[in-house]
Image (cartoon, rainbow, N blue to C red):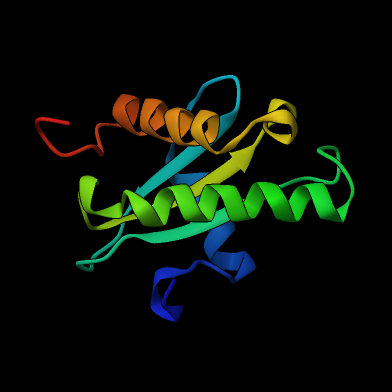
Length: 114
């Protein structure tokens, strides 16, 4: 992912948590906040409750890759934060990808016809 497509600063995370809308399923929680640009920015949060660093980094890689592969199917102009739930530690790529589609469909971010 490009540098401008990432959310990294704590103040940006806190802004999106406080002003954004949240949607969830059993694997992921997503916070959505409209930004004023023509790109989507992605942030990922995986708590230490999920597991040790190997597990947390694997979950982050899976979420990042599932988002990257499908990013042309999402509407642009949003800041999106994915928060992993404990079930994500035992999930594979396809389950995480399905969960991303599920929560973004609830949020209304999917493009028409998908």
